[in-house]
Length: 112
Image (cartoon, rainbow, N blue to C red; front, side, top):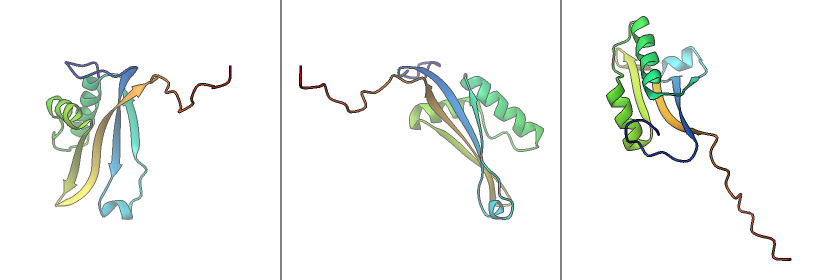
């Protein structure tokens, strides 16, 4: 994770943002999760906060909270509710784009 001191595994880090309907309202109105990828954590958080503001949701997501969650737990998650009933969850997870290929568990050929 290339931003501000996060350790960086081989390959480039992208951020997967998932918005998933949760709770009892999901049984009434079935919705598939929405998954979006961002190349930069700041852009991901800015997009989330803009969309929340546009749809009159409280500004409960901020860059510092997302950064800390990703750094400490390798993900960030925040649930949104109305009158005590959960409506949706936002989750941010760093992913490696083009990871180094593993050896696939294949040993060297013993016959020469």
